[in-house]
Length: 150
View 1 (cartoon, rainbow, N blue to C red):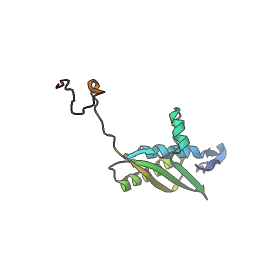
View 2: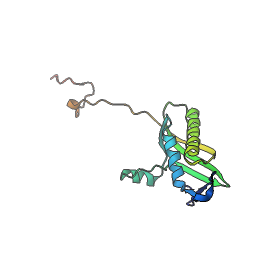
View 3: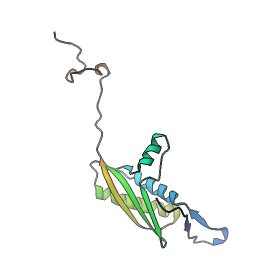
View 4: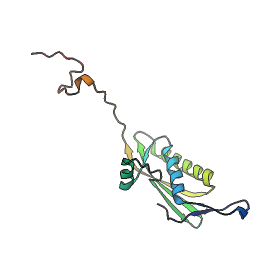
């Protein structure tokens, strides 16, 4: 999580209208959404408190992102879980491109670097078909066959 001070945007036009400040949370949310939209990303890595909040229906969009803004240089660390079978370097490179592009487009901030941390791989879930007529059957070979031999 970034420090709580807002980030000043350098207005290229006249500053007669005032200044523009962006909360670090906004940059975290933009980075997180850009990362999750990359094909091959399963989810962002969050903390225990993020998981508890999601259980109670509060979606955290800024989880899995850490910002470091020093000397007008923005560094972004992204923590993700990838899907099994994807090319890790290709997905990580696409995350870097998307995060840089979205932050530049939405805030006009130039990102110094985007560091991608792959925290794990999520295996594909096997779709198990359950026969509602055989919910309590002990014999797996009797799929739909109700005849019993005595």
